Image (cartoon, rainbow, N blue to C red; front, side, top):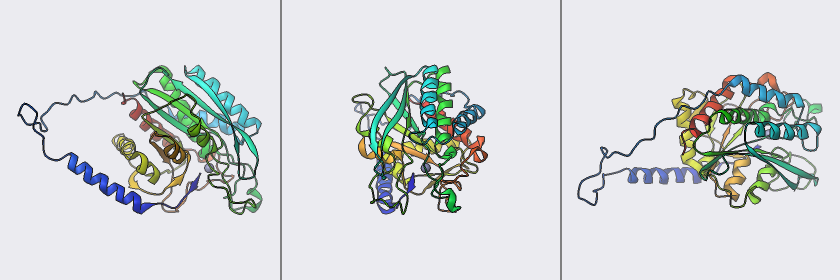
Length: 343
Ligand SMILES: [Zn+2]
């Protein structure tokens, strides 16, 4: 996952025009056909609030640790295969219909890989659906590490990868106990994090990140698959995490961003979910938004002070030591509050 240059002007203009539209559409009350006036007293039946189950941060933390203990889940490794097996078996145990989608992709170094996206569908017959996603692969080199000899080491990928999966596995455990009204698909993407590093010695490759989600976006696991929207989680377990309203998410799915950030504020997580647009990142949601018609947002830890992701990003220090249950809880409970209140 990488930081990219923000098209802030375009987003700004869209935000302004959306604001104008919103103001216009909420303006004067309109007369009803029978001559009476429809105003704020008109009763639109308000949906009853659904209290979702309790997202257990200890359980989520344990799911993160299972992956950390496997070792780096880099493509082609035993840990990678073990993680696919563990996710598939666990999600089946929680009552999901599970598909492992295989597809051949080529990385910047001209290697071919069998990308394995793990897709779990809860209540697959329900036409009203939301998907939740994370990537489970680890970056095969810690190119951000400040120690030169560490740069070629495999990344532990605990916050960057395992944390998103850990939150989604805990949500799956809760869905097994109590169904939301909508169908939920949980997608664990492969090969998100094999993007071309600087000075790789290979010719520049366009779109070298997010290969699993690019494959899925072009080859849906079910013909005609659709979800009302998608929520991607990336780096959702770090200490003192902050989540800004990311630019690509606002551009393609601004209403979902508002819903999620307002929900977080109502739950008391406004200190993590900052009510401010910031950044624009190349992550799985970018390709899903570009290649499918499913509006998708990214909840991703960004440190505005340092203009960087969390401090151990793509470093050997991305281990369990830096995982905070408070962050897992804030993200998991917010996402559950949102999905259990959808129809
Ligand atoms: Zn990464």
